Image (tube, rainbow, N blue to C red):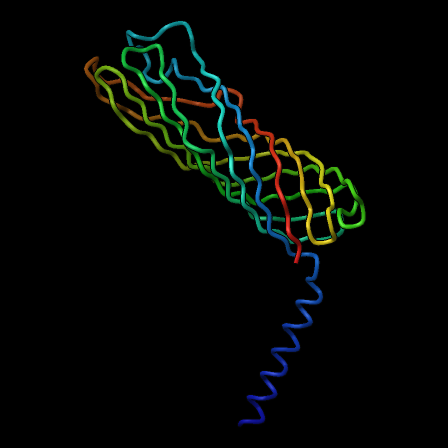
Length: 216
């Protein structure tokens, strides 16, 4: 029995070492920090509200954080799992005592194409696309109404950028991303009666930023 256990351990170690060697420079983790911009439709927060005006949008900006773990399927194709956060941001509306807070998070499965081998070239352009689940959260308050809406739904993104090799295992990048998130709808009761809270990002979330990837 001891010989069988010893043989099994040796085989497991050898298999693990072989896998580690085969996966060398293929597995990576990355983190990105970006400034995001979104044109948020707020005139429709409560349909028919007497405080609504002709202004139907608010340009917001703030930080976006991305964390990913990926695998290089070839020298030019990468697959990765990504977690994204659009940080909380708020603004005052033109409605009486009106205030809005918005934040969002999402998980994505991304497929990325590198035009060249990023380990063999100093600069490598790339493009990518991903699909996943987004979770936006919205808090709205103004005279008579204070409510919160949250929704989990389909999210997607496209990206483009350049990678810069510092050393074989350390890559920095600059990228632009366009993100589509689910809209929010909720029935609410306020002093003006029953209405429907609905909000959307009119042109998606656009972001530009920098990041770093470490290859193992």
